[in-house]
Image 1: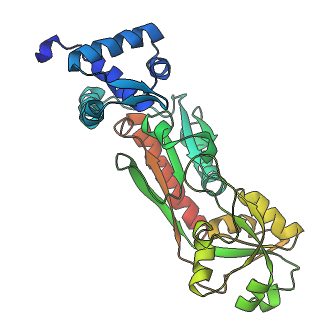
Image 2: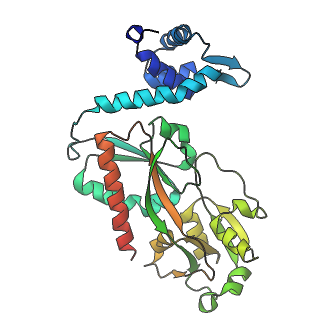
Length: 316
């Protein structure tokens, strides 16, 4: 195969087709017509003497040859993009860029306000588009459709870049007039009603089963190690709902400390240390290798890290 006779655009077509597994979506992402993408797929089949994508009852599925090509093609395109990126500086003061961030409710409540204050000072024309974990997928991040995702992640694709934002302990948020405040020990904790709150990862959430401790997360796993379990009255994926329920309905909300401290100056609430050990959590930001060398993205990542450090100082 003579490389001088190969249209390098076909490699781009192949990369997107193997990620989208759909001619229409691939064409849309590359901003070309569907017939043009179909013609590109035809030329790829000729070039590699392989069907590349085969239609099945589950949709278009890559062939074994295509799956083997995927990582090599991605590596080639990333290296080419890096070589062509150049050293153009990013002017944050003049930029009107929109940064799209998938942020959990916890991250959005605790980090984003500090980040926005920093943006207003140094880059007043930049806009943030905050999305929820249910809005996006790992695929969206990998494809560079989302600038970054900020959340707690159990597992990540190896291709992603990542950086720890901070570690956070847990605190219990109670109504200030709760009778538990004066006698907050493990027995009192276990005898009370609780609101469970969490949302990690990506995608649409599923219903919770109070008996399935392994899926309940850090707090309940810590209790299970003691041979104990709490009485969960409400399950929610929204930290502000959990905090409101702690005040209005007398429930205990066991939250990451930075979330609980959003009410540290509110006389309606009391923040106390949990009466048992809960391992710290780690908040991370992740991003696509496609954006790793982009000047504006590098600048924004640095700003996020600085805002996180500032937030940690505020909470000390």
